[in-house]
Length: 262
Image 1 (cartoon, one colour):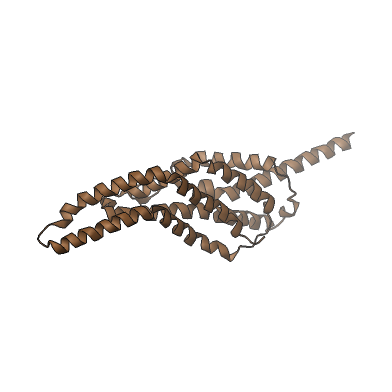
Image 2 (spheres, one colour; image 1 turned 180 degrees about the vertical axis):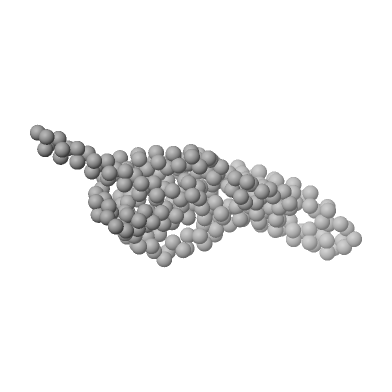
């Protein structure tokens, strides 16, 4: 009877060790998404809250997924496993950060065209200079992520990805993942192209006026016009951008399939 109790205790210890190891591996895969370089405005969330969210998600996914990690408990295998999971998490987060970077970069371009670049401010939370339109586009991207339940799709896709690529398994990166950055910036430029083209045609019109009337101070006269047109186009874009931004986020999620060799 005592032997049976000892076997049960040993089995429980093994299950607990496997659960903790699996939770840690999943947590390291989630680390770049929520803690190290979090998506969009998650950077403003305190680090303690981000860590707790990561642990909660990792424990939830670990309970619904069973695997044997006895081979990782010896030598350098565990170190390589944690390092591999961290690299996988960086790769998964890269597509969403590419979408955010595209919106911020294109927002800076729009600010340069309108004249809002002088209103850039330094954000101590992100330690970056934020342009007004870039911040607006980033917040719109975050609103689209929540409004269309892309955060649910993110967690569902991450859970399905665990079945395809279990924690601690070896992985081979595909060369196609290098195309993600270019595709995200291309799609982002297509989304904001009405604003850029409208401001570009405004600059051409003001250039013709300046050439026709050299004595007129076109810069001081045209600057308020450009600001007014820019605000109107941004207002129109804000009403129409939900669906295109949702497609940009879906493209980020769908790009996970092309990152790794099956």
